[in-house]
Length: 111
Image (cartoon, rainbow, N blue to C red):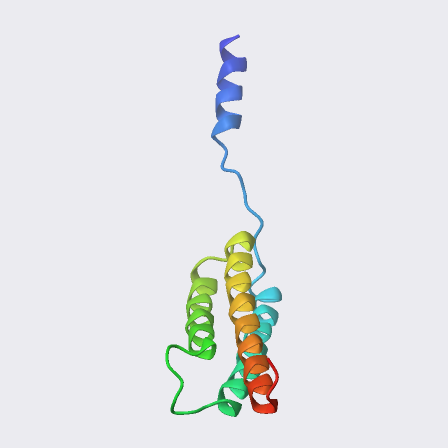
């Protein structure tokens, strides 16, 4: 009975392994996707650059988040951590595209 309890204790002590991103295969692809989103937002940033803009442009937020995620992927390759990171980048990229539409509609006179 004691040996059964000991084996159950040992099996409960095993770490729960989390899904990981392969840094040699998936990592570079993920970083390329991040870079592509950053590049598209950069082009938007250049198109709508003006001196009257107040606040932080979504590109600046996106660039900061991409930099943070590149640091994270070097130290922590857990899939859920990188999914959260990618989701934040996607949210900023959407914000960047929204600002592009706002500028385009303002230029044409539509609301």
